[in-house]
Structures are given as structure tokens and as C-alpha cells.
Image (tube, rainbow, N blue to C red; front, side, top):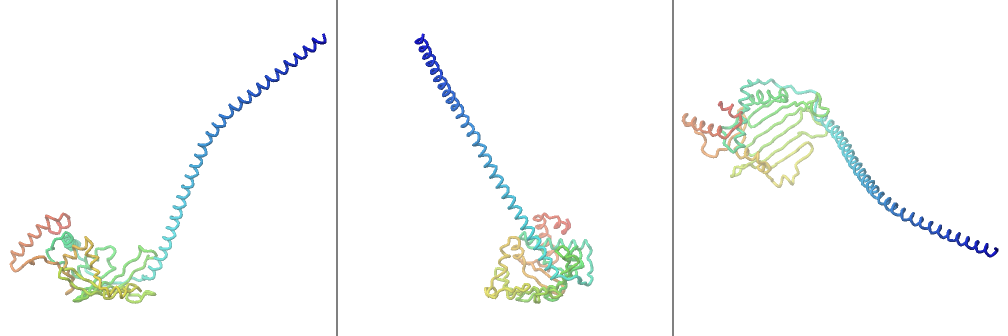
Length: 333
């Protein structure tokens, strides 16, 4: 019996040991399965988090760019406003410096009839339109001081009562009392000055000076003198002899270069045809005249029929090439 019990006990222990081994194997299997199941989840988690990091990085770059743009816009706006305020104040001080509160009174001019004034304006428009088109105007363009004051100035909302023109032999004088209401600090202030133009045989000069001295500015305010000449190719030559603007003077070395300042105007496609079609400018007997450069024989008025025939031919040529209504109204068609 004792031997049987011992064998039974040994068998029982053997069974228990096998059970422990199986349990360990089961635990190891479970651990291996857990690792296998966990590893893919970790990889998928890592893969899922990578796009999130990239999205956050892109969002951060966009925010930096947006803030930079807003900063640049804000800085530019601030600088522009500051410069505008500074420029407004500087201009306001200069307006007060060059203007006065008391306007200049002028002698009254005879106001031309409005229809007659329109004819004069259209005549001037026709003259310059023909020069620009490369055509030769019928006659020289002349205006008297009465026409300038009673038409061109009297029918200008800004110049009426604020400017007066006088013509003498070879001299043109302009007195002005121009309102400065559209400028900073210019309300009820006026630029009061007198300008002169003198036509000599070989010289041309212009001068402008305020009637009230300007602090810090030597008189005159503007002064320019030119030597004039006309070449064989009929181009004008203006060379500076002397020049002054406020307190600035034309450098002597530039004057010594004897540069023709008209060269810049002849390079302008709109101004060059006008200069090429003009022979000169004269002031005689209270009349200022722009003389036309004649390419061929001038109109001969010795016989009335011949003169009228040539005029009608020229008018017909103008009407064929011109399309502006002002020219048609001026001619009378």
C-alpha cells in the first residue's frame, strides 16, 4: 500500500509539472500574441501621427507668412501716412510763406461776347491742330490784349478777376493774384506776383517776382535770359545766358557748355511739329503774333479773286483732313 501511494503521489506530481509547463507555454503564447498585436498598432499610430505633424508645420508657415504680409502692409501704410502728414505741413508752411491775405485789384476789362470769344478760341484751336497735323495754317495767329483779357481770362473760372495782361512793344506783362484755396493752408490766401517777357532781336528773357518780398528769397523769384538763334534748317537755338529760381542759380559750367535747351523739345513728338511750323513770335502795337513758317509761296492778295481762290482751296483741304466739330463750326459748315 505504501508503494502504491508513493507511485500515486509521483504521478500526481508529474501531472502538476506538466500542467505548469503548459501554463507557461500558454502565457508565452499570449505574450507573443500581445506583442504581435501591439506592434502593428504602434506602427499605425506612428503613421497616423506623421501627417498631423506635417499639417501643423504647414499651418505654422502660413501663419508666419500672413503675419509678415500684415506687418509689411501696416508698416508701409504707417510710413505713407507719416510722410503725407509731414509733406502736408511742409507745403502748408511754404504756402503761407509765398502767399498773402490781401488780393491784388485789377482794372476792369471789357468782357467779349461769348459767341465772339468761342470763335477766337476755335481759331486758336484750329491753328495748333493744323501745326500738329503737319499742315500750314492759313494765316498767322494774333491776339490783342483786349482779347486775352476779355475772352481767355474773363471766361476762365479761376483766372477771372485774378489776372491781367498788358502788351507793349516787345514786352508782355502779366499781373496775377491767384487764389491758393486748393493748397494746404491756402484758404483766403493769394499768390500775388508780376511776370514779364521781353523779346529782343537776339535775346529772350523772362522774369517773375512777388510783389511782397518772400522771407529768405532774394529778388527776383525767377529770372532767365537766353541767347536766341535760328539755324539754316529753321530750328530754334536757345542757350542759357543766366538763370535763377528762388535761391538756386544755373551753374556757370553748364552755361559755358552752350547747350541748346530746345533740343529736348524737338525730341517731343507732340511739340516738334508745332516748333517746326512756327517762324517766330512778335509783340507789336498791343498785339502778340505767332508767325507761321511758309513752305512755299505765301498767299498773294494783289488780286482779290486769286487770294480768295487760294483760301477756299486751303479751307477745302482742311475740311477733308480735319474731323473735329470745333473746326467745322469755325469755318461755318
